[in-house]
Length: 413
Image (cartoon, rainbow, N blue to C red; front, side, top):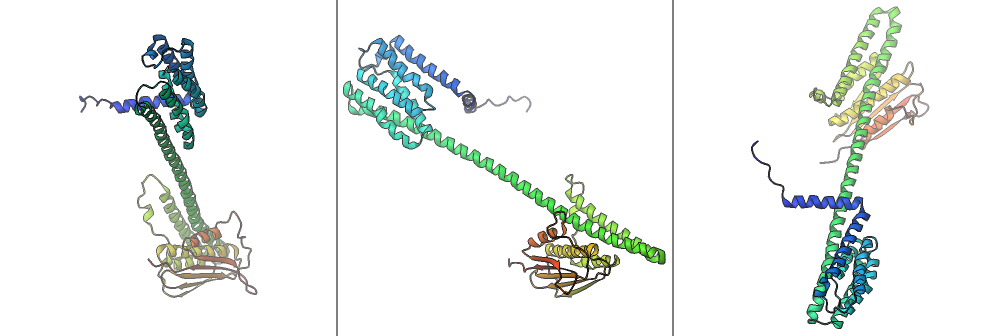
C-alpha cells in the first residue's frame, strides 16, 4: 500500500555492503590500505608503551624503554609487507618475538604474528604452513621456560590454539576465494560458449536461408529464362505459342514470389504473420509440377520410379531440392538439345536413391567454385541424414552430367 513504510534494511546486508566497499577500496589502493593498517598498529603499540599498559601483563618490567619501543616497532612495522612476503615478515618477527619472550616483556604487539600466519595460509602454498610451527612455537616455549607462571597446559594451549585459529581462518577464506573464482571463471566460460553457440546457430541459419533462396530463385529464374528464349523464337512464327510462354513465365514468377515471400515472412520478428511458418515445404507430390515447369522451359525430362515412397517430410524436401538443383544446372549449362532422366528408387524406413542424368555438353561449374552454392547446398542437405551425394561428368563415351543421391534407412526408434 502507498501509506506503508518500506521495511528496514537487514543489518547483515548493511555489513556486507560495507565489507564490499572496503574490499573494493583495497583492490584499487592496496598500498594505501597497507600504510593505513600498519600506521594504526604502530600507533596502538606506541600508545601502549606510552601509557604503560604493557606492564600490567608483563612478566618482567626490567626491560628499558628503548628496548620496549624497538620491540613494538619490530612487531608492527613489518606488517607493511605482510601480503607480498608473509613468510619473510614472519622470519623478521621471530627474533623480536624471542627477545620479547626472553625478557618477559610479553608485549601485546606480539599478537600481530597471528596476522602474518593468516596471510601465509591465505596466499602461500599450504605446505609453507609447516614453517610457521617452529617460528611461532619457539617464543612460546622460551617464555614458558624463562618466566613460568602457570602450568604447561595454560602456557602452551592458548597460544597454540590462537595460531591454529589464525591458520584455519586463512585456509577458510582462501577456499572461499578459490571457489568464488572458479564459479566466476565457469560463468565466463559458459557465457563465451553461449555466444559461440549463438554465432554458430546464426551462421547455420544464414546458410539454410541462403540455400533455400538459391533453390527458389535459381530454379525459377532458369525456368523463366528458358521460357523467354522459347517465346522469343515462337513470337515470329506462332503468336499463340508465344502467348503460352508468357503465361508460363507469369505463373512461374508468381510461384517464385510466393515462395520467396513465405521465406521472408518466417524471418520476421514482429509476429505479424503467425501463419508464415505453416505453409508446407515442397514434397515428392510436387515433383510432377516441378518437372512440368522444366519441360515447359524446353528441357525434355523422363521420370521413372521404383518402389513406394514412404519418406518423412525432411527427406522428401531433400530429394525435391536435389532434383530441382540438378534440373536447374541442366537448364543453365546443358546447352541446346539436352535431355534429362530422373530415376527414383525407394526402400523401407526412409531409404531412397535418386539419379539425375542429362545429355548436355555445356561447361559445368567447378566443384570448388566459391561463388557456387548449388552443389554445396545439395551436400549439406544430404549430410543432415547421413547420405551420400555424387556429382560429376558421366563416364566416356557417354556425355553429360550425373547427380546421384543416396539416403540410408532411418535408424530404428
